[in-house]
Length: 144
Image (cartoon, rainbow, N blue to C red; front, side):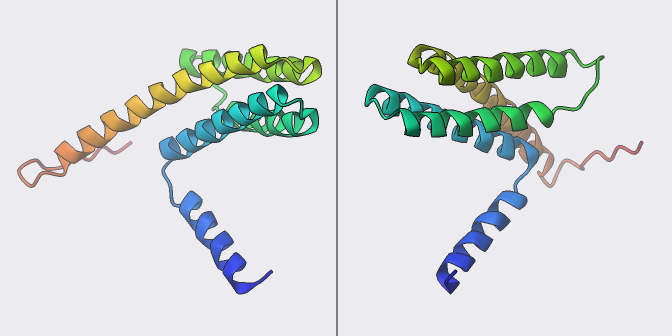
């Protein structure tokens, strides 16, 4: 690998590893959505091998989202998200077997909706932390 490629790989790795968890989740959603759009395009062009490739990439991201959830049966949001990710994962398997763009589009829309929800949460956190960084307001320290 030449020096330019090594530097580029190191830069990308550093860019990902220094992101907060919310931003990483947005990046995963963005990647899955992009892969699903590409898969639909490949299906429409009858490029079944490439469509398979991009469906698998999106399925792997959904799997990562599913496994990154904290297992807590008392956390309804996590439980519901895990059920939704499981549905998406299985639906992508069906889409890949049947080569059906309708299934892929359904999952794309679900991921876009979840992405917007996460984006809203991140924006809210930024606004709150921006307010707390004002000099006249002292940050609250919570121990426990």
